[in-house]
Length: 278
Image 1 (cartoon, rainbow, N blue to C red):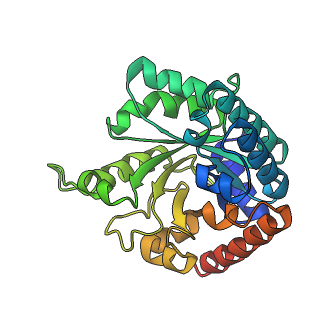
Image 2 (cartoon, rainbow, N blue to C red):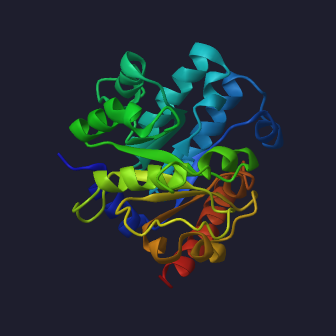
Image 3 (cartoon, rainbow, N blue to C red):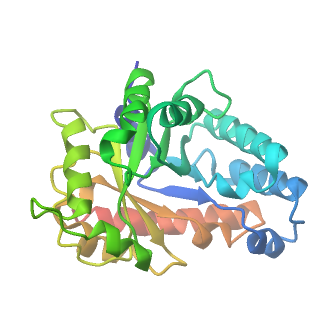
């Protein structure tokens, strides 16, 4: 069984360092001339998969934009995950789940067990009930070759009040999260399967990301203001582990598949150039 870290390392080597988010919010569906309903959602996702699913290393569907349509929307999410996998992309399901006990174990089964229709290569998770509360997710991912990206330093202004709070040991909450995830990846080659989410727009962090030995997802590039050139400021020596993530900058080029592919190729070239300086 290959680990997620191995698969991600190979995918990035073959397709380049890029994650594209699928965030079909109402405004974007309207911009594409699609109705804000399940039919529009399905057409949107099918177009994105057909245009870039065989070109991008990682694709990140945002679950909330599917869940808002209820069971039929979740059905489209299931179908989109299957289509992406058939196209050879790794699927990072953006769910940001976090809970305790049997509930977090159920989330782990829903997203990280291959028997589930929502099975993804990796998921995002929230550690703010304690990193230890995510143990069932970590264990399920490890058992089935999956990955987990844990929120550490996010770009929303509200996040700093929690993430940069200082504990009794002098570390920030974010640094505690970073250190605990780093332990999971210690000694793993070529890349650990447990990563962090660090916003591309937050600037110099003052945190030590150098020992993570796992992927660092950097959302917020493009329309949200982050630039590939600015990644060095955020990540410093950890730049080689960064997985840049775009959404609106690529999706806004649609609905024509050729335009989606051109936008993908443009941002990928920018990311390659920025990370080549690492």
